[in-house]
Amino acid sequence: MPSVMGQLFLAYSRLRLRRIARWMSEPAAEQRRLLVRLARRAAGTQFGCDHELGSVRSVEDFQARVPLRQFHDLKPYWDRLRAGERDVLWPGKIRLFAVTSGSTGEPKYVPVSDEGLKGFLRAGRDILSHYIVNTGDADHFLGKFLYLGGARELAPGPHGTINGDLSGIVNEETPWAYRPYRLPTPRVHLITDWEAKLEAVADEAWNADVRGVSGIPSWLVALFERVLERRRAAGLPAGVITEAWPNLALLVHGGVSFEPYRDLFRQLIGRSVYDLEVYLGSEGFLAIQDQPESRDLLLRMDAGIFHEFVPVESLGAARPPRFWAGNVETGVDYAIAVTTASGLWGSFIGDTVRFVSLRPHRVRFAGRTEQFLSAFGEHLRAVDVEAAVVAASARTGARIAEFTVAPIYPSADSLRRGHQWFVEFDRVPGDLAAFVRALDEALQHRNVDYEEHRRNDADLPLPEVQAVPAGTFYEAMKRLGRIGGQFKVPHLENSRRFAQVVEAVLVGDLRPASGNPGGDHS
Image 1 (tube, rainbow, N blue to C red):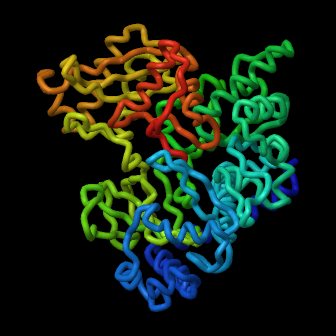
Image 2: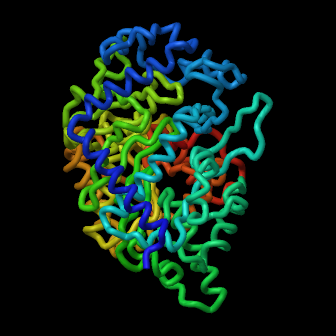
């Protein structure tokens, strides 16, 4: 018998999805109304006075008054905000800040207003709404939903502000009505040491009725392994995770492309479950997979975020063209800038997307603006290398746990050049050379610049692929202090910063790593 909570939530979800369906047909009108409302709310703030937000009546008004900026360009406002000053970028005082490493490795403190927080909490409900309406699974609330996220500070700082991982902030602000249905418990959720937290979550969850899980794929794998270890210690079957959680039905993932991990999760879980992709950053919850049969993500138009899009080739221009829901096009790679109910105004978030449909506006994540590989003019993106890994694995029977690729630059000592891949296989291909050839062919098929540079091996030789032992990437991220929360292994970069850390792990170099690995905590 479905729980009362399940029935109530199913009724709420049907109403909520009807509301979403209304703006799906007119997304531009919804975004225009939202932008004017945000400008009106912030008109009396310092930023609002500096930029005449009280005069904004249209998207064109806003774009004429508010330039696009990188996050750090707003530093004078951030300093005042974090010092506890009121009415700086958004009405009132900001008490919560989501800490993210950003592209430089320096921490960013992204404000989360009370209104912005409501948008994140609504997004969490929307995830379950799409799932429950699409499946009719009102029994979901008979068990637990496990959200593997980071933590936040236990006590306010000197100005009454609280910093933390976005997932930690949102989890602690979850309404009381939902708390009986979640794991980990507040005591475990607040553990800041990631490895200790993984162990504690496994202790709570290994014999619980877990019906849904959410997290970054690589960290969920680490949790699954610990849950199965506890079952083995208890003398129970521990071949797949559904022996521990027989009612597991929902897997929510985001942060990186899931495709390279899909076969591994199918093997670890032991059967198919409903998997749902989300796209969020510390700046906002941008999109959600609303159709079970499609990997396209529905851009959220009523979540307190006004989206702007700049063609990637125009980045760096003094006045780049600014597109929005009313005039974007499909098939173009856009960098995203957001204006939010937390006080971000025309701020680039470092991501790129490509629209695959309009009305409704659905996108696919195309990568980070600073994560690319073009050491020789090949212009590879994250989506290229991730798709190539999937294709090569399918052709050779391999299964990937994790990977990264970096350039080999020629030097005075060596003319060696090309791309070096480090791959942690869950199942090694029978013929590694065949895997390399399949990888190369897939890259050439996806990227004409790569194909041109690979022609006759004259400019770019065949990729070098090195299989590495299990646990290599976990140790590399640990050395960089980037385990836990939403930290992701960088799948490619235009330098060898992260590759050098992996090499140090492989040779047993115990010196601490330094520098930014190229991944982002967003």
